Length: 361
Image (cartoon, rainbow, N blue to C red; front, side, top):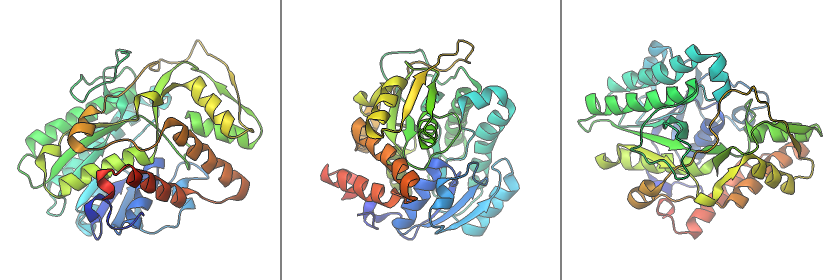
């Protein structure tokens, strides 16, 4: 069920460059692509946590350790390996970290993205680029409805602002340099992505499971902040679907796209913590609101009707399935050392096939 026929069989034999492949989403994407017969090349910093999902998986493809701020190294990778598609995931991805390190955040998320585009611009092999940004790229008005792809870019904090900048950069390069059909460029925005194998600092699920493993309670600082929670495989299926359309030369898909969960998957932090506890008894938490906390959005949702109607992409899992698969991954890992990554991919593809989603046919 994870074989070569998915996404029209487009990835079998294709050389795919993933930046940020040692990160959480990148490690899942690289693993899934290899299962579909792609030749994967990774370009990334070394893993930032121990344990980490990338090193726990069997290393099935070449990874070049480097910094996307190093244009010459990027150009060499593109020249040496001749990728047909680039999935750009490398980023400084933490809101609170961005307050302490704004220059690094903007440099990585804006100039690093610029370097990717420049390396691809002079390549004869690159036919498609999927630039992964964030739902936080929007100017957040704390609306009760979801943001659409044509809403205003912005961002209160340096991280969110840098992602808005990356979207503006994407639009500029699409219009200025990637407008003749040789290389198609799209951007993708997703919500709060969860799943097994994420041990990043300052994220809710990793914090919850790390404390559960040592029988401690996690401190919840923003209990009523509401986010669109989705399993990591959901947006990845969107990125892969988008890449499929770009690789076959469908220019109309070279735009910005939201890949978020169903409306009932928009939950508060406290609701997520309660669901986690119902799945794994060792999980505990207590609310400890810090009035000195730096600003973070309280309400943020995505409108994915464009992806639904035009790209024919739909989420697969309910919020309960998402939470169960995520927490059981960690529970199994901490109890036995076993990874449920392959099982989660197989089960996800089967669930998508049961729904007759277009990318499984």
